[in-house]
Image (cartoon, rainbow, N blue to C red):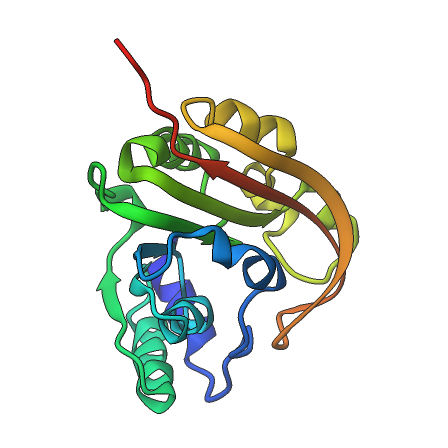
Length: 206
């Protein structure tokens, strides 16, 4: 993730991905234990983190853009909720052990090597009963031109097979590819090819 690129993108007065939560998160967030600690990866301007805080969760939003996180704090303030924000590159971020009741990854498109590392630690970071919620673009999205990484960054796109392999330490509840209409601000807008994944903490016995 290139900080300057994202700072420039978020410098607009508008919330470029809108202020409403992602549809898949909205449909599935109640799977996260009520009032629990939730980590939002690459939360940008904070729309998903603020929504979860409004539902009573204790939310930490992580992003590489200080500009985006400043807008997230502004959104949290106007919404009357508390949001912890951490400005860091995900390659430097330690999710910890047995720390989160929910981890949310919404259009968090990072290089494949980093993604595999992050996903490999999800089960370790989740508490028993914790839930991982992900939506991302698939390679088919390249033909739609309605959001997501360009062809030059195609390794950041995900398939269900990728995710089932990368999340093998977790218990995968569902993982499917589909096309749907997305209307999230000006930058995610139109017919889209996505993968949606739910996984939960799996206890490993030695």
